[in-house]
Length: 315
Figure 1 (cartoon, rainbow, N blue to C red):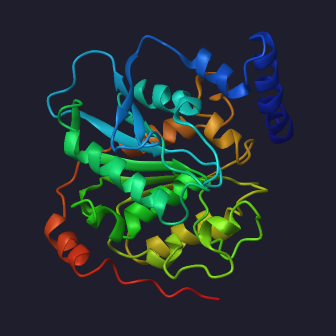
Figure 2 (figure 1 turned 60 degrees about the vertical axis):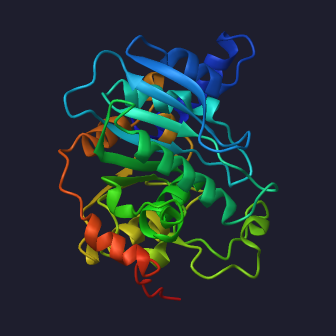
Figure 3 (figure 1 turned 120 degrees about the vertical axis):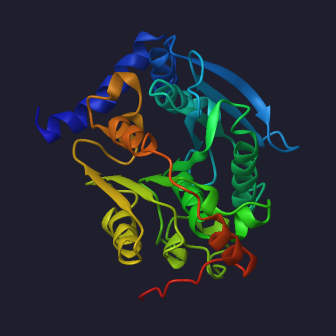
């Protein structure tokens, strides 16, 4: 199948699924068809006091291995204006089907909060996961943070800018890895009217972009994007961040996928659309890598000093 036909098939399939399911949205169709008996779900777990501070836990079926499953905390996109964890059940289901504990978290959105309110929520969710990993059957040495689009920005900031986890008593050194799909890592100032007020355009606060924090203290990283993405430039964002991290000595797995776009890159995690691109295979391979000894002492000292040295950003 050519890349052109593959690109057309995804939205057509999604529309067909929606029609067949009597008015369901395409995302709902993916979630319905992705269901299987290979995981359990605990929904609506509070990690904070607010109604948007909840997450769903997807665990593989059966007993946990002796050292625990690896864990992924996932944040969805939506320009920091929209999104709901229930729409991304297919992500939790996909990861759990590969022997990974997955947490899909909500967080406050604009206009309720602006930057950095949503990062504070995401840090609280990740801290909740770190502190309860063993109770969930996960290996605390193998906790990863992951996101798609705006959620990949959130995940990147938690992994690279130590300020956010430090406020919860944690540090990026506790993470086994960072996974970003189609993330905006170098995008400000933005011309998107939905994004501008989120970051106080034109008075964007300093240090608000992940690329500014890329350095040797960043956990090992998986960076994936559609080769052709009309919403978030993969060269300026994904490839450039991978290059910067590799230059700093960070192990990076970079994948550019044909046959998908900004949206269907994430959709390819769902069972009905996995033929589009091997996103789930690649992410699962990255997450399932053996645990390594934590570098907590060095990183905690860095966090106490106020975070990693900021990389110089070229104009």
